[in-house]
Length: 437
Image 1 (spheres, rainbow, N blue to C red):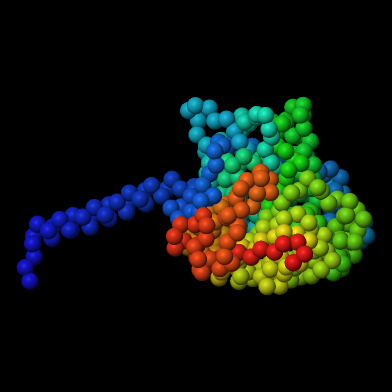
Image 2: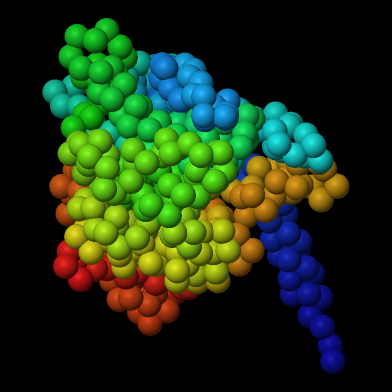
């Protein structure tokens, strides 16, 4: 066989040039930040029309029960610190860019084999930017992380929502973060209490004439809650799912007899009085507790606000059939959705694994599994979450006409879902039940 030398060398040059193009793409990919839209991202994953600012605020919830120090029937109290990160529509001055640095930790405060290692990563928001204020305020979204976690664990989502006209407040739950983890009973007791406290604090800051940067910016009367894992445990309780007596018994057994959590149980009068009508919608990623008897049927019937659940059908932390899906079926007085990532486990909510975890020989590699999904690209999950949370909150907090993005065939493999590019909506299921079903 004879070769046409001209065509042969032209082909070699073409192949080489494509290799160079790939290398250039690798360089370009270094500019990717958490939450950026991939080429196959669904429609509503892209950032919105608003520029984004971010601020860190320290709050203190005074005179709270210190369950970790209350022993032998003697209660101890403390001023409970809560650090929050607030993203909001902002004015970005000429010459400034939306880029913020966030700090977090690898390791565990309770595991001597995993020492705490601080790290930073960048996001698309301008630190301490001037808030954008106009004739109307923006709906409020409060975000609660897992155990352990941090206020920046879902920054891909918090920034994205702020760019679409929300004020987003993410909580560092004291004694439950990567950096200050303590015994589990603090998380069990304080999750819902922290969320309600932050809602009330933001409402106070947002009041006209408060002299706070949130004055006139956030509308606390139009609030959504987002929770992941133990955050899901907390937001469901705040939304009306009163805890069971079984949880009270379990809590008492690990705290030496304290029944402090009883005030958050379904039959408690104080709990019933705490159900807050300012909360209009809830998003719960893999909420923990159903498999452990945290809720029973009467408790779940206390939820009346719409809920969007997200879970993996192989979740081995919160459970699926007897976990998230059971909660979804049990809140029979609410309109609710369940988005399921098939073959996914528990990590359907967080940012992608930080770069330092990708080196198998590095100490931070032990944290890779804290962020990753074995069968899914986490960046892909992030984009899909942005899309569906935007649709759900847009309907319930902004009265947007986004129904077509939720009125879908149950199985994504059967027919391409609206809002997804052809051949891109695979491996998912979306269920929907109305009140009374």
